[in-house]
Amino acid sequence: MFTIPQIRIKNSLTSNEMVILKSIALGLGCDTIIKLLELSERNYQSICQSIYTKLGVGNSFAAVQLAFKNGLLQEKEYTSEKIKGLALEFATKNIDRL
Image 1: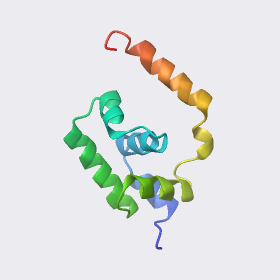
Image 2: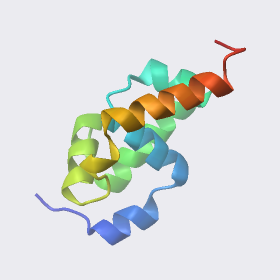
Image 3: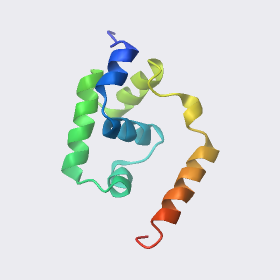
Image 4: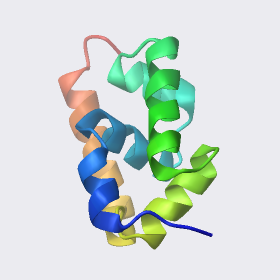
């Protein structure tokens, strides 16, 4: 399997693409990501397709797998304590909407 060098991948993904890729890696579903990031479904699908194209994969599972393999995502970034902290921070900022 041909893989794109890590540096080129990292430089080619936008910040929105990285946020979505990290969200997918956390196990969040598309509906949750769309709601949290306040995206339209069409915009979300477009960003995902861009991620898949840039990484040379066909789905989110392969994208996350390749991102970990190439060091684009680090497993240590995703600890349960960090997830809880981010969820609490988000809930606190958006309590009125929730």
